[in-house]
Image (tube, rainbow, N blue to C red; front, side):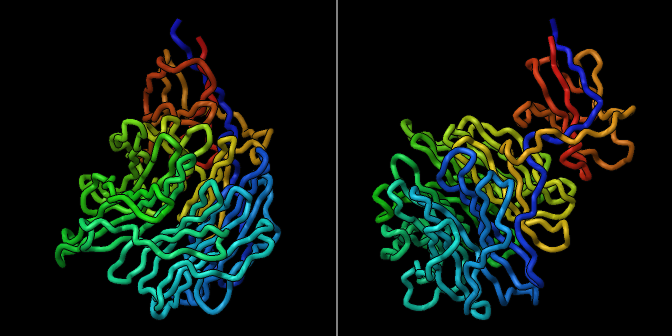
Length: 496
């Protein structure tokens, strides 16, 4: 018998991500930007979640007073510290933090210390051995005798022995990618090594650095954007590329890079994760034929045959991706998770995942449930594969830190139910799901049909949608209109 589909005329709270929670505490004339997240080791459902951010003074266009602030949860994001922890506020502007943990649970933050009047500075690391209660004095990572010009940001990762690997860009001869390793829990850092040492990229410069340590092999991975100015033309006078570097000797030397992107002139914001058998990278850019629309794509390297797979779209092509998104996390079950910044009537945070090491992606699920513009998402996962997202949100007209997760501890057991409606958003006629048409002349955004785990199984268009190929089970129709909230979901059941 052909499957039949019935729709329940009631709305229920979306079961895949919790209601959004604000996790920072307001300080007068300050706002949060560039949050970073790490999930520490621990028992399932009790792994600590660490969030650090740059908190800028709102006086003037350039922040004259940027502090490092720290937050923490030990119950899957259900509760957070009653007060934000001030990590650094001294002398210089503290910018663009990143955070990681080692196998012993120590927490590390790397950041840029910059003079905002000259844009010169250094890269620093601070460590906490008590879960963020106290922090050591900062240790300089780069070994420049003089302050680096045009400093950007550093990224850090830990290997299985607890050694720290950090990479960044600075200008010594030109803007290159440099790295250093600490073998004593961040107390000292080794001699800096130039990562971008291949002669084919001697002209130009690098930026947008990300790092990862491949478990099992402890290979050090660096993804970076290379750029080269070819003329003074704004439209055609530059070239951007995404490159991946690999070190198999603990960061002493790096192999020549591999170019990953196929976009053409404009691409950036690369990210990388890996397990023993795969390396997964993504990046965001303009493919040149989308009228300025940016998309996020991924590539996967398969160890064994030592080959790169084809380019795969991560973001939904109906919506624009944007930089500051595409952050990656890898769970122990092999799934890859990402947090995207997309435009769909307003700036939103979307979650997507891959269960085949980046060969295909689930399609985006909206995470933020507020109406303000969002930016700077980051993502972490725990040992059970649950995802945690943090981002900056302007729903209250200032950048605040907001959080959501698909962990059951943070999702209400009894979802809020709304009244029955005589005008359902969808109905079924002879195995076709009929989605109502927009009553205005404005374009109607696509809706999604999601399975019980919150993964997209169909993109629904206004009108008739053939659902005969669906397996029996419970599904959810989520309307993706610009004003739709996380609770605007319809439960549907497929039977035979």
